[in-house]
Image (cartoon, rainbow, N blue to C red; front, side, top):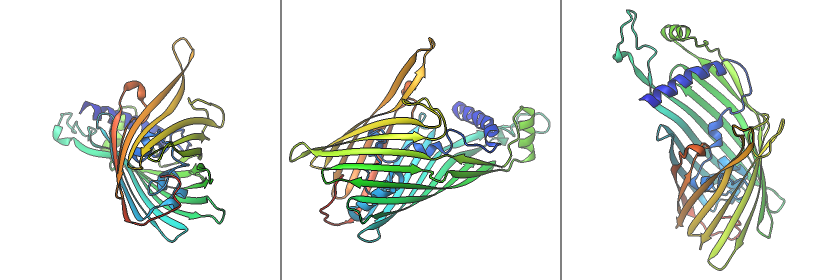
Length: 366
C-alpha cells in the first residue's frame, strides 16, 4: 500500500515533465529492458547472434534464421519486489525461403495503484470509499519483416512499432516509430550486425483528461496542470560482433559484444560524449550438445563520481541457464533492470515453442 502511494506521488510529479514537447533522455525506456531470458542472461548482447522469434525485438534481420515453420516465445518477469510486472509474447513464421514475418507484444505496468485524489469529500471529511485503483502501463506492438539479401550471409529487416502508454483514465499516449537492422554471417562463424532503434525518431502524442475534482487537487497541492504534448524518442544505434566455436564434438561456445550508441547527449556510461555516448556490454553462452546452456554477461557499466569527486566504474553481472529439447526451450535468467546497487535482482523465465520443425543444414548460430 505504501509503495503504491509513493509511486502515485512520483507519477503526479512527472506530469510536469510530460507537459512540454521535448526529447527526454529516457523516453520509452521500458523498451530498453530486453526480452527473453537467454538475452537477459547475456546482458542483452544479442543483435549479432540472435535468431528466431525474439529477433523481432533484438534485430529483425535474425528472423531469416528461423528453423521451423512457426515459433512462439513467452516471458514473464516481476521487478521492484513484485510491484511492476513485465510481460512479453511473440510469434514468427517463414513467408518463403528468403523472408519471414514476426509480431511481438510487450507490457510493462504497475497495477492496483490507489488513487486518493477524491479521499476528502466536499465537506472536508475523509471517506475511504472514495479511493479507487488504477493502472499505469506501457505497451509496445512490433510488426517485423526480414529478408535474405542476394549477398551470401547478409540479411536485413525492419520493425513498424506502435506504442500505447496509459495512466489510468487520466492520461494516455499513442506513439509510432521504425527500427531497422542487418546481420552478416561469415563462413568462419563470425557474425556482424547493426540495429538502429527509432531510426526516424519515435513520437508519442500525450493527451490528458482530468476531471474537475482532480484538477482542484492538483492546484491545491501545487502540481502543474499538464497539457497535451508530443514526446520524442531519438535514434539509438547498436553495433554487434559475435563468434561461435566448437570446443569438442559435444561442447560449443558463443561470445558476443555489443556497443550501444545513444544520440540524446552525455550519459553516465563507460564512454561519454556529446552528442554520442557508447555503452558496451558482452555475453557468453556455452552449450552441451545444443541441449543444455550456461550463460554469463556483464553490462550496465556506469561511470559515477563518489563524495570525494573521484571517478568510479560500476558494472552489473548477469547469469542464465537453458534447456532445449524437441523444439521446446526453457530459459532462466538472474538479472536486474539496472539498479544493481540495491541488489534487486529478479528471476526471469521464458518459454519458446518451435512448431512443425523441419531439418535444416545451414544454421550458423543456435
